Image 1: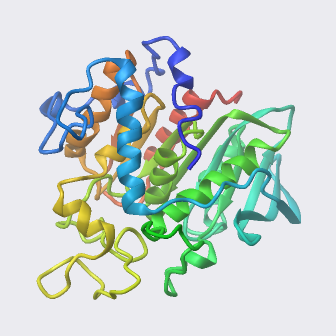
Image 2: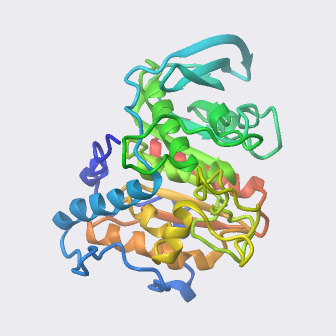
Length: 371
């Protein structure tokens, strides 16, 4: 997948990378969860049971985790070196140039609809990729309080907002991006979406207005899952914010639905009934394998280290998710890094003005917005 190219870029930073006071408390778990690792198997243990003891051990363990996830999720096609951005229409909004675009995302010149927002002034700017069901919402032309791209553009970011590509439409059966190599597993939808995001990162990085080392990714709910898989599986994203995606498997929460065929439960030979797995609707795809072997998404989170990320938690990601996040904290501690894992919490699944403001502060802190 062309990974591991920049995972240790942040290691050149000071070990105590101190956030501003407004968001600093969110980098510490509540007292009840300090040091609580829950029932999750430590990512600081090799598959043979031996411990990861030094920072020099971590790249080998990281590659072991990646190899396991590739075996479940399938291999990516080659990344696109210069994804085309086709400009269709331009408008001006509050000092921001809004371009309606189509972005090349996959082999065969497959494209996704999007909006590119560029603030006035001299760049290069930090940038953010916004992912959601549709491109309009991310630029303030859809549901309220999900306009991450527009709000970040007002704060001095270039923003690319994209919607669900045709191959992954939730209204039609999933169509894999490519014919995987013989003997390899089919490409799961969430991994395919991460591949799309990786190509969008390259499209942004190639723009003269963008600093290629300061690109993050953000999404809410379905977009939060997409942003999580993108940032964990593609290490050139400098940071990420995941809004209430459900950061671990949880069959007590119907909206934490990784078992569905449009996420991790796709099986070309089996069509299960939609909904929470049960005796009459069994788990399918790699989701079944992961649950049966005791694997969980905390392993994926660990691939972020030492890059920073924020969980903007709501109904699906309450404070006890720190049990999973503490494992990535432990990886960062091994690497001599602090303040790389943060979580805010709210009662509702829907974002709030306050939770969004924390996302913007976090991204400005990580990516260095001039505004």
